[in-house]
Image: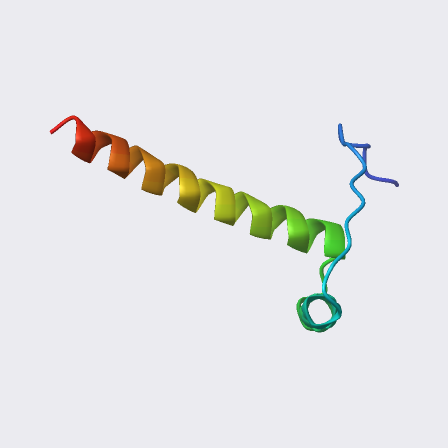
Length: 62
């Protein structure tokens, strides 16, 4: 049985070859698709950035 399709948007990027090779190696080791790995990495990065900005904003108001 196929998984239900998720709401998504296609993205095309030019990626440094060394970064791409690392991504490939990571995906082979972890057994996850590149899309999943990239989505998770971006989510972690953006969440960390948002927390950092939230803390900076709180410090400005103190």
